Image 1: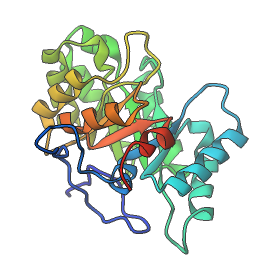
Image 2: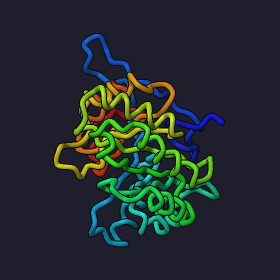
Image 3: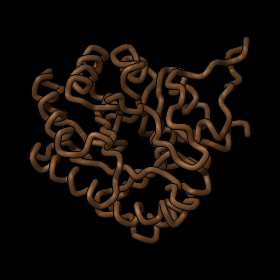
Length: 259
């Protein structure tokens, strides 16, 4: 079954969106993407450990207002976000998809725990799972272990659930990013993702997104996440090959795109 690599269909959202980067003018500075198009690519994110229920509800209300593709919250807040997507939607259609993080932020949970965490998040209403790989396996170039871990999480949730795999790319050279992406693809993921945003090594980079695009572009989606706070940086990620953006400053980023 072919799975989507952008965002699920919702109100005024087609089932598929272009997966490549946007073009520019002859000067190379004017993006052709409009605000509504970029909004559909956004996972509006709140993963602060001290985030309250009230803050999660505010995130969801803002997500509906901005018409983003998804929200991304901790497993303990999935049920709130899932309820909000229908409350803030139109009719029977959800206003946005709900993603949750697994093995977050260090990736050192046992695989069986990650699989159970994913199952519970889906039971609470998540339709997308962002899992952190065991980063030590990437540092050791143990790609088979990474593929096995991803495969077990993939098998723990229904086929319609989108699985995104966080690689913590700031820690990896291009060759390792490419190998990790190929392991994610072999394990059944629908997306590869740059970063948790919590590692001191840094977040998303154009270098990493380009390497990810080289490895799986056109077959898997690519989510750039971590430290993207301006329209210029978001556009650079899209031009490098990102098909999703994990943002906490979504309103500020979108304000920099034409309506």
